[in-house]
Structure formats: structure tokens, C-alpha cells
Amino acid sequence: MKKNLFLIALLAGLKITFAQAGNVGINTTTPANTLTVNGNASVGSSYSNIPAPADGLIIEGRTGIGTSSPFNMLHVQASTDISQPSASNIVARFDPMGGSDLTRDASIIINGGRTILGYSKDGNKYAFLRGNQATDIRLQVSDANANLLSDTFVISAASGTTGFVGLNTANPQARLDVRGNIKALAGTGTQTGAVWNGTSNFNGFEAFTTASGDAWVGIQRSGTGATLHLSKPVGSTDGSMVHFDINGVGIGSITHSATGIAYNTTSDMRLKENIRPSQFGLSTLKKIGIYDYNYKADEKKALSTGVLAQELYKIYPQAVTPGGNDEKASPWQVDYSKLIPVLIKSAQELQAEYEQLEAQVKKLENKI
Image 1 (cartoon, rainbow, N blue to C red):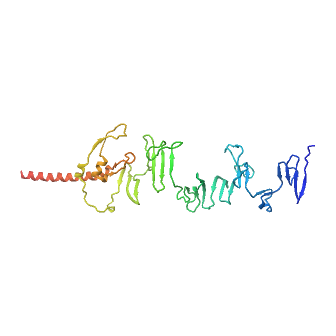
Image 2 (image 1 turned 30 degrees about the vertical axis):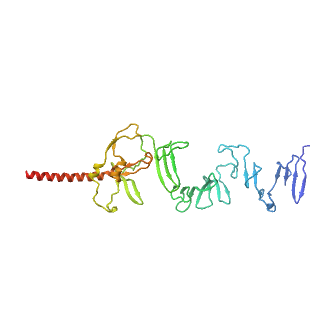
């Protein structure tokens, strides 16, 4: 007969069943598994006198699922590649009450609410990793050396900054507050070179920062189109397009009218001292050499006319910005607009000489 044979032992009211198929049942006479428990259970010497939740299980030590050597209190290791449309090689899955239902709220809480992974709240669906502070929501990651980067991604909930997003900062001070470099590149794959000096393999925009506190912006664009566009809407007849400041003091600007642009250098008398007539005039102008040349990097060898920066520096250094040892990375540069005062002074001296000569001619004419 293939009737199940079982042995029922009453030990302090506990019913243990040994079925013919080798299954063992506790509080059940028809165990369907190798071990079937009808009720709650506990594992561990410290839990021997602690009641587990109804139909639940409490375990004192490490628990391994799919592994015989659990490293943590719960260690789950996949034994086969179980994939679904939303993910591959799934190790564990958590569904809300009622099973796989993407319309239901679900959350996982770890360490008493220090970390919460959730999906959906009051009908608003989202995924989040939350810190244990009421003032922000954080996504924290670890680097290659297992160092926790606690401020990787922060959404502030503090008064006055609610909704502000911070990258690498715990206290974002703007809608988007980034501490570090920013890139927007027109390409995929790995970038080589740098946008700010035109050597990048991708066009794009970069904002650079350094640990020492330095920062600068670079933009690269191929072709004949403008790299930077500054505009104002219809109805703007005059105003400022660009403003230059140092330590709160304006030093220049680019302003516009309805039809043109003006490039302005600050020259407010109230900002100046030690004012006196200039010594740089016609004698200075006569020393400045003017040359025809072309640039070595210009494949078309287009003719240019101008000064030589190193030579001008010895005559009128105010118009020259000295460079470094590498003429490509740090060339000497000239601001030709700085020569205008010398031209004006020279014209004034020539006019004075002309007027003096004119007066002498009149005297000679009167004597004849």
C-alpha cells in the first residue's frame, strides 16, 4: 500500500510527523516538503524562549540563501540567471501585498529607517534612497576603495531650499548646485582632449573646477557657426550684454543699442588717482615697429599687419600681456586698443607743432 505511514510523537504538546516520503511535519500530518512547519519557528539559542510572530520565523545568526557561507546576516546568491524584461540576473525580488502589482505602493526599510528604497507614495510613483534626516533625500554611493560618498546626490527638503538638488554637496544653495566639473558633450563614448582649448574629440560645453578653488568655462563648436550666442528679446533697445567685475568693482562691459554693440573699458575719474599728463606720445609712437607677416598655423598664409609683442613690451608694456615658455599654450598678446591713447597724444603733439609752425609762417609773411 502506498498509504502514508507516519509516526506521531507528543513531546510537550508538539506534534511531529515523519511521512513515508521522507518529509517531516511539525503540527501537520501531511507535510508536503522536506520540512513543513504549521505555525511559527525560531532558530538560535538566544531565541529559544522568544515567541516568533504568528506563522513567522526569527533567526539569530547569519542566513544564506543559495550559499553555504553567508558573509552577512542575510546573504542571497543566485544559482541561475533569472531574468525579466525589466532586469537581468535577478538575485532577489520584493513585491507588495497581493503580488507583482506596479500600481501598489511598496518600500524596503533598512536599519530602522536610515535607508528606505521605495516605489510610489500616495499615487506619485518614484524610486528613492533616503537618508535618516528629515531635511533631505540622498543617493549615496561608495568609491572603489569602499569610502562612502554621502553627498553624491541630495534633494533638499529644508525650509527655503525645498526641491534644491545638490551634486557633491549636502546643502544645495540653488535649484541645481554642482560642486565639481560639468560637461555637456555632443557625442558618445570616451572624450579625449579638452573643450576649453579646442582639442576635444567632441564639441560641447564644460565648466571646470579645481581643488584649489579655481574655475573656468570652455565651449567648443565646429564649423563657421558662433560658439557663443548672447541675445535679448524683442523690444530691447539698449542695455548691457556682458559685464566684467573684479572684487565687486566693474572694469568693463559690452553694451548694445538697437543697432550695434559698444565695447567699454571702465575709465571713471572717481576711481583714479595720481592723474597727470602722459609722457607717451609721438616719441613713443615713432619707436613702435609695424610689420607685415603671417601666422605659422595659418594654412592659407593670409597677410596680417601689426606689431611684435616682445618688441612693443620694451617700448609700451601697458599694451602687452607677457606669455610663457610655450608659445602655443601661453603666447605673448597685445591689446591694440591700449595704443589709442598714444595715438591721440601723438595727434595732439602734431597739432601743436602744426599750430606753432603756422604761427611762425604768419610772422614771416607779416615781415615781407
